[in-house]
Image (tube, rainbow, N blue to C red; front, side, top):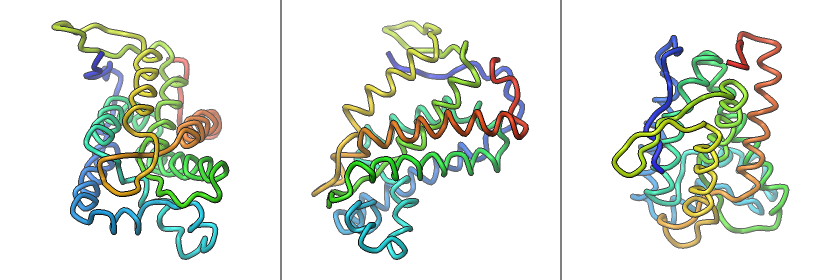
Length: 217
């Protein structure tokens, strides 16, 4: 089951932020590959190091969102951001979507921190922020259909099924930690839960207080 797109017929705006985020993730990954272990150690989020120096290490909360544990991790994340991010961005608007995305990423990192305060293992990945996007998508497009490549044919499937497949993909390719190489690891389980929960909560809040409409569409 390989998702290749969803219904964008109701999209009204160009997904500038979504495409920019994808580009930044790809560029940062090439820096990560070139920098090796030293780059990973410096810019990934390390729970114990952060707690020892929260102010000095705070930048890693953001930089770790743009790092990945390998090509499969990067490709899976960017595919799902490309499919689902544009529709959510269209509903939120560019600026609010960017804020939403970053807050989901922060929530994901802090959720993982709460369960691994003494860990010295670097954590990284856009998975938590993208989990927030998926949470928003479920609320905004509960009847959404996603085109999936199965065998030689393309079949429309419920978004809930495809999002469930994304979670499985993350468990196999993007969960864990990076210790010695840029080809293993990713974010941890609680990061996904934290990001997803943040996406759902903020969509309820933003939907009632701003321009996010048709949450049942």
